[in-house]
Length: 412
Image (tube, rainbow, N blue to C red; front, side, top):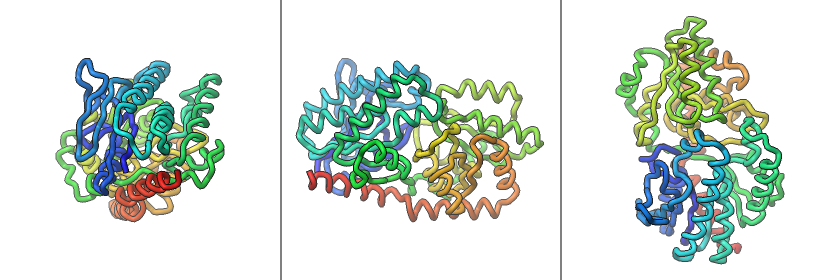
């Protein structure tokens, strides 16, 4: 089958963001399918558009990448951009995706992955133009995810986004949700349950490995012999990383200088977090800048003792964050402040601790517990890797996506 794959933030392992689309597309190509990836070639894109062109075509590992001159490719850019400007860029990408997509060879199915939500509008247009089925992947429930963290309060925009989501869900022949909670929300909005399949984020078992040597990265960050817990990912409003600075402050007040928190990544809140750590005069917080290759991220993680999966406290928890699955693959204990299916997964499989998102002292307690018990850390890390291999292996979940796409074509 020929698949139109729409993802504004497409990146390979040499990029700075999640690689789900790359890994899935690569898997589909190996299975004999054609994949045309439509993505943005602007703002840190791996496949920049030639000057003056609306789009550029290239190929990577058998994937035809159509890079268009609209939107932006790096989601880290969005965390530092006003919301109204981001929305304009989202619409710009969706509009040009349709214009460019119409010039390409006819696909057998259109597969659009969100975020942003507006990519679903492009998916609808292209599926109707080519008279082929449309599959929509939901990585986050908009606008609820934005409302729950306090990032969106305007009632008119909330109504407008809910209306858009319902339109896209109704138009899709099938929907892929990244968590059970996302599926529940989609069904509540009117989608038939049988038309929604849960395919969570996956583990890069060959990239993040317990055997990796991270000593060089550990030395570069100046961690010494301290117990190091790392957060790696976006530093935006929704991530709520003030929680980590407060936990570090509590540890400092307790005199636990043998524990250090590493924040690796970028985003609009990073300057504020640095200032906050500076105001507290903390020596147990280390900021690590983004690197251009995910393999180097894996080495940085390997140089730490535990991984942190942190989000701003909310009422509902439906996320499926890449960083948790990378941590599992790395064979590290996971300290997570997200209850619901994520926290339960970690606790039930004895991979780490689920701490209270409103009380950073619970994270400080968990870090102290792990720092004095190397055997517990080793046991939790081994359990994490086993869970990654058993339940979240990339190849297994990519096969599920292939099945969804092929069956949707057959049923249409």
